[in-house]
Length: 410
Image 1 (cartoon, one colour):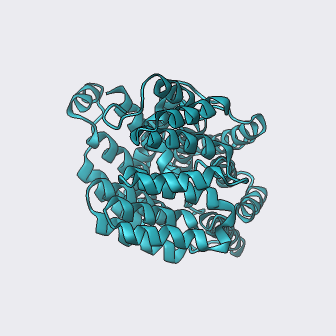
Image 2: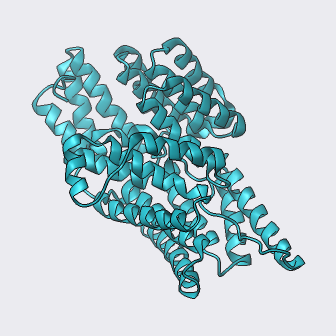
């Protein structure tokens, strides 16, 4: 049960990452008959925000960073610029370390007890931005407790902090606390302004996660006043996708995972196709679509989708991640021989990320064990132990050196 609750904590923390990155805030609300300068400032704010997230969703991180730096410089008392820069620092790190993939977060190895240490410079930059965002939001609330925009940004900052702690540091219970704080603030936003549909993203995800827990866990949480509903959560996410001014694409991205879990595969595919059409440079949506096709048994179409991604010159720098996801999709769907071929191609790539190579060697060992090639499998596990540890790859390698890998006992 502990792993399920930690998994729920992670999903809650990942709200801003799975969607990564639609704008988690509103632009300044114009008062009736505003002065021309106010209109101009609001338009400038919105133009920078839109340009930044258009670049972000199309994986142009440098352009996104420049937009967010300009936003912080032009609106220094608003939390938005600092929050978006913190989000940029976080997601850019996940991209560079090849952890911007759902496969990592459904792997039980991700929930190993050990925490991780981030790069010191990256950690310093993220903390500086997120603390500044919280400080600016809290300052506005001290001046006006009824400022729902400030409260929304405060909750959004805690959501981003939770996501960072879960995915970068793997501090799951700290992530859970910050995720709950985000939900608390956004519920208050909705209490004060029921039309603030963007706040439904975090609240709806929370409702869905708690409502999806095993009965024993739900009873335990209910004793502490924590309740949720899968159906209500889905409705709230769909409303955020329909009416959210700034998080509509975020909500759609989350709904892909929810629809898949609920068996609504045609809905998941429809939303993915919409996002691919809107953000053609975002290969991650293409990878998710190919994964979905494989998971629902449309292997031939899935293979064509993965091969098309690998054939795109624009995605050359990301071929290692695409190849890894291709192999993982085949492995999970039972096509072990085809998976072995692609894992071997990955480890042969000179410029593939070291972590992906380590995980691929572990998979190769597992497949060789399933084929009865014990000595060859042991050689792969030994190779894993000579490389830097990734998640709990070393623990798994030692386990399978003692006893062959078996899908029944995994």
